[in-house]
Amino acid sequence: MSDECESGGCLCGTIKYEFDKSNLISSHHCHCLDCQKSTGSGKATILMLPTQAIVMKGELKFHTTPTASGRNMSRGFCGECGSPVLSFINEMPEVKFVKAGSLDDSSWLKIDSNFYSSSAHPWSPIDEDILSFTHNPEPVQEN
Ligand SMILES: [Zn+2]
Ligand SMILES: [Zn+2]
Image 1 (spheres, rainbow, N blue to C red):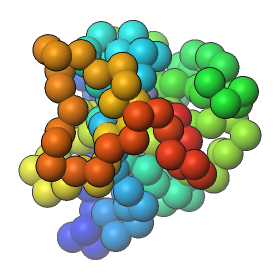
Image 2: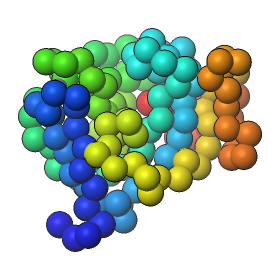
Image 3: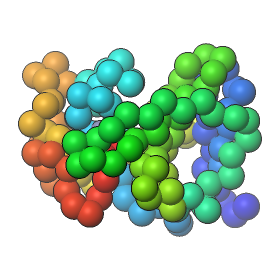
Image 4: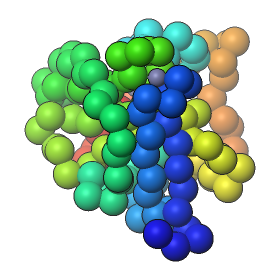
């Protein structure tokens, strides 16, 4: 891959991935309650990428939950260490949402917008400097 190649993975190293960052579609903070539960923090920060742009090494486990709009969100994590790594909507397998905290180097990343500002907490406030959506903008999906 080129020098645009970014890498990441889980805490224990069982799961690794690479992608060329020229493929990045957009990036978001999601403050929805499911993201809070699944990350154990105030929000999930996600990078939307074409599925075909991501090269995976290792087998993720997935947990699937229905979304507010009636689709099914599958969140992938390492079966060894439990780190959340990426997620996707079953009905939209052509894009995936990589967790920003799993990147080896995230210093280059700029976040485009906030999702679900309506469920953000004072202890993990939304970024006021970027676009904000109270829920989920269409046609962009929950992560
Ligand atoms: Zn792991
Ligand atoms: Zn969310």
